[in-house]
Image 1 (cartoon, rainbow, N blue to C red):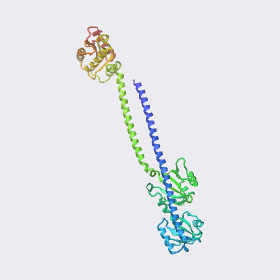
Image 2 (cartoon, rainbow, N blue to C red):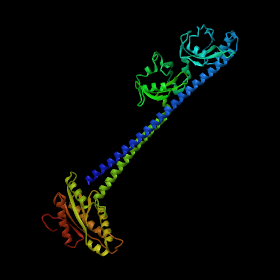
Image 3 (cartoon, rainbow, N blue to C red):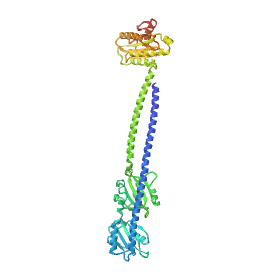
Image 4 (cartoon, rainbow, N blue to C red):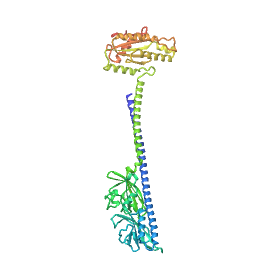
Amino acid sequence: MKELHRKSLYHYATALFVFLCYLGICIAVFFYGIQKAVEDTTRVQLADNVTSQCNHLKDVMDLEFENLEGLADYLGRQDNPVTAENGDLLRAMVSESSFMRMTYGTKEGAAYASDGAEVQDMSGQAFFQAAIGGRRVVSDPIESQMDGTDLIVLAVPVYDSRGSVNGVLAGSFDVSRLSEIFFGDLYGGTGYVYIINSAGESIMMDKKHGEDRRGQTFFEFYSDVTFEKGSSLAQVQADLADGTGAVYRVSRDGETRYLTYEPIGYNNWFICYAVPEENAQQPYAFIRDYEIVLSLFVVAGLIILLAVLQYTNVRDRKLLEVKAQTDAMTGLLNAVSTRENVDVWLQGDEHRGMQALIMLDVDRFKDVNDTYGHAVGDEALRQSAALLRRHFRGSDIVGRVGGDEFIVFMKNIPGDAIVSSQLEKLCQAFHAIRIAEAHDLRLTCSAGAALAPADGSDFDTLYKKADLALYSIKRGTRDGFAIYQDGETGV
C-alpha cells in the first residue's frame, strides 16, 4: 500500500511539475509577446514622430523660402533695392518670421542687413554663389561675423525686371533655436535632437548635450555604445549614405535608448533623435502594471491550486487508506487492519493494566442464509456490526475477520468483570435485532475472550485462546460467552 502510494505521489508530482513548467513557458511567451509588441509599437511611433518633425521642418523651410521669394520679387522690381524704406521692410519681415536677420546682397556681394549691422562682403560665401546661380539654398552652419553664433542661411536669387539675377536675399537662423522647434513636448522633453549630414557632421546640436559633443562627429560620439543584435554603427553609416532612416536600441553605461534618424530632404541632412527607453515606452506603462497584476493573480491562483490539490490528495489518500483498512459491507476494520491495530496497541506505550480480545460470531448464520437468503444474511451482518459499534467504546478496536466472525479488542479495562458484564449485555442486545424482511428471525451470538497480559501479549496468542473460549460455547448451547482459563483446553 505504501509503495503504491509512493508511486502515485511520484506520478502526481511529475504531472504537476510538467504542468507548472508548461504554464511558466506560456506566461513567459505571453509576456515576451507583449514586450515585443510594445517595442515594435514604440519603434513605429518614434519613426512617425521623427518623420513628422522632418515634414514640419521642411514646411517651415518652404514657408520661409516663400516669404523670402515674395520679398525678393518686390526688391527686384525696385530701381534701387537699397533704400531706408526697404530696410524698414526687411526689419518688419524679420519680426513676422523665424529669421533672426535678413540680408540683401548685391550682385557684386555688398551686403545690407535688416538690423543695420555692418556685414562683410557676401560674395565669398558658398550659399551666395549658389543663389546667384538661380537656386534656393540652405547653407551649412556658418559662424556669424557679428557675435560668433552658428547660423543657417536660407538664400534665394533676386531677379530684376528683365529676369536676370541682380542680387541675393538671405535669412539666417540661429542654429541653437532649431532644437526648440523639435520634440519640445515629446516624452517630457527627455530626448536629444540634433541634425547631422550624411557624413555624420553636426549641423545642429541639442543644447542639453552641453560641450560633450563639440568637435565630434555623430559616428565618433556613438563609437562606444552597444547596438542591439542585428545592428551596428557600420549599418548606421550605410543608412546615412543611402539616405535611409531607421530606429535602433543602443546602450551606454547601463542606460538603454532608442536612436531614430530620418532624412530631412535638404542638403543630405538627417534629424536624429535619442530618447531613454523608459520614457519612450511610458505610454505603455499601464501594460506592465497589468502584467504585474496578472502575475500576482497567476501566482495566487497557483498557490490556491496547489493548496486545493494538496488537500484533495491528503483527503483522497485518507479515504483510500480507510477503504483499504475497512470491510466494505459493515464498515468495520477488515481482518488485516484489525490484527495490525491490535499488535500496534500491544507493542506501544499507551496500554495500561488489562486488555481483552473477544472473538464473536453469529449463531447458525449458515442457516440464516439458507432459510432467508443472502440479502437477509448481509443485513444481519450489518446490524450486528452496528450493534458492536454502539456497544463498545469508540477507542476499542472492532473488526470483521471473515464471514460472520467479529473481533473486539477492549483497551485498558479495570478487570475481567467488565468483560463479563459487557458480553452478557451484548448477548441480550443481539436478541433485540430485527430484520424487516424476516420478522420471525431471532439472532443470537457466541463469544470467547482472552485477557492480556495474563493470556498473552500478542495478537496471535490472544486470538488462539479467545478462539478456544469461543469453541467451548459453540460446542454447548451457544448464545453465550466464555473467558479463557489458563491451562484448560475447554472453558
